[in-house]
Amino acid sequence: MAGLVCDIVTPQARLFSGDATMVTVPGVEGSMGFLQGHVPLVSPLADGMVRIEGDTPGDAKSFVCQGGYVEVTGEKVIVLANRALRVEDIDAASVREQLGQYEQKRAALSEEEANKTTLADDIAWCNAQLNAVS
Amino acid sequence: MPNLHDIERRINSVTSTKQITRTMEMVAAAKIRRATERVDEATPFSSSMKEMLANVAAQSSGGDSPLLATHDDVKHVLIVVVVSDRGLAGGFNSNVLRKAESIMKDREAAGAQVSIVSCGKKGIGYFKYRGIKPVLEFVDMSADPTVEEASSVSAYAIDGYTNEELDEVIVVYNHAKNAAEQVLTVETVLPVDTEALLANVAEKEEVSEGTSKAGFEFEPSAGDVLDSLLPAYVRTTFYHALIDSEAGEQGARRTAMKSATDNANEMVETLTRIYNRARQSAITTEITEIVGGAAALED
Image (cartoon, rainbow over all chains, first blue to last red):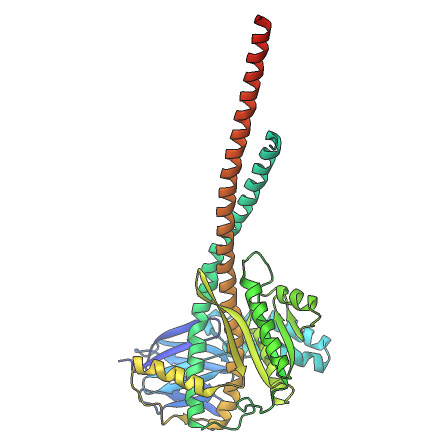
């Protein structure tokens, strides 16, 4: 039986909502796994993979997430990610292309100007996606 | 009495204006749905964020984050005005702008310096005309606001606040209560008022379930979590204001265009009546003349 309810939400949309037996998230201080009855916990997240294990073995879903927070109560896990995507939906070729564009843009700007843009985040997001598929 | 041709021309002109307003009404109606969906999709994030922040703040007992501290002396106020890029939306923009200006007057009377961040073309024009240059301006985004824009506003606000260059940050926008109604909303974003958040969450908790909120663990520590959660909260608030305002804009435009179409219909009706009356009287005059002429010949 599924012991946990897991939600993954981003500012744009609710990406996933459903039952799970175990949820693994990339905390800032290392990966954490949650089972039913976990102590209530709040932690910021690093970039990386969120894994949701379903009822049956092999029924697992993976999401790549950038930044955000996780909130756990005994039976509910809420992942608030700044950006998130299902691993199956990643298109490695187009991500690589975008990464190239972002890096070009950044190279064209001075460091101070680059700090004003979100390019650093964009590049980190591309890298996170590529890590997830490779 | 205007001549027949003039009236006919006016009828044509009103009819073509009506076509435009009707089309705009329908376009806005279609956009409302998309915009409202977007607000609905973003709501779980921002409400979870608020709840989490309230929980964290409750446990770290205030904390010493600079974003929570109220500055005793309010000298610099930042007003973030969220309006649209295009007009023809009734009082949508002017309500926000007038409110923003009155807040500005209030704060200036209290001896504070006010700067403006304008999201949307209409705000820029309004404030430039009054000799105020917005410190940050965003155009061509009201139709499609993104998280990035919200991030740059919040980065500016947070930087200013932590460096004590700003003492208060207020956002003024239209909240789309439903498709037909917009509510002018003024929110103080910084300093973050955790007590209000707590009260808000506590209210909801009572309705849903009576779970005890104490006993949360934090990794690395409550203070650290709070420090990173606060900027994210500010960003979410701005993003939410932007998309909420977009939904409101479409709603306001639909209402405005609907009444414009109704007015045009009424006007066409009146003009047609006048036209017919003028035509009738012209015919009557003509007949009288013919009859008069024939009678003169008979004699």
